[in-house]
Image 1 (cartoon, rainbow, N blue to C red):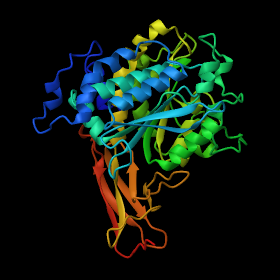
Image 2 (image 1 turned 180 degrees about the horizontal axis):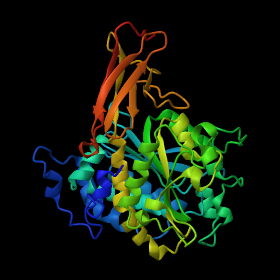
Image 3 (image 1 turned 120 degrees about the vertical axis):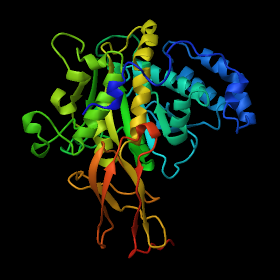
Image 4 (image 1 turned 90 degrees about the horizontal axis):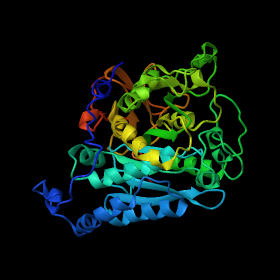
Length: 438
């Protein structure tokens, strides 16, 4: 299915990728109903210095940490900075959260994440995520689209999942280096529990930190950023006969959604959609591929997100050269800027809502799925009784189930609401259920 973002590729909604307009105090007052708070004034005064501090170069661990802390200090009401764990060598795994409510989940606001540099020698994603952060914070309240995006989405950005591997890559190279692995010599994108095979991976600290992070947040959509090719790859990376792996394509129940997500990125990218790949031997029609069709991968992060995290994730290969010269980084940012924003908007596809008892109390762990789309692990509500299902426009039957009680079925007509920054909302109430909170 061709998405609206595909048709509009030539006119990205994120604005000109050139120089920023001058900062004026009245731009922060354009609403007419809002008065700049003290923290906002600080943000205005520091805006130029923060932007100027982020050059198009590679930022090593201390510089990256200092930049993230500076952004948070400048925009304390818009950002939340925290470490989700430490690498083998003890480096923090920093995550910057952006949104109207950055410090905690709010009912109805979906959680989104970008993760980069899980292979330490694949470096483009690490840097463009820093520039994405810069673009988001400096555009808030100035660009209507970015303002609405941040008001209605909680965005988590992890510039590096493998800081040790990045620091160990002393000589940048377009091809494989030992910096791909973590300090223990493990490939983090082969290190997650696998849904189809017992891979007996020795879970690394970086992997465990991400697994805990996924467990503790209600992530709906995600992408992990790599290098070494130019393509958007989608789940499954592994499979069995039931998923079609015998035919060379491992199909998930949400294959149509994954194809849409991958095309959303590739067609908003400057050239990925052309599908030419990095040499004449390998082409990717529309710039996308099923992961298994490309090559089988055990213990990958995107399959883990989808199966156990209830989070749709794709893998973005952003550069033919794994660790390109720094003077190419500005072009990589320009090539990916519109795609990064348009992809985040897809977190508002489909349907969302709450499941409650007869007294209006939320019901955790209720199963909410679409008939005909059973997941390996049934998708369940979070502690607030919330569910989020990414679906393309169409008619669906939603099945809400509380064990021991009769299921509730609801036929819904779903439209593309990404432009409105809100999925269709539908709540389920179980009149025979009474939750006791003790």
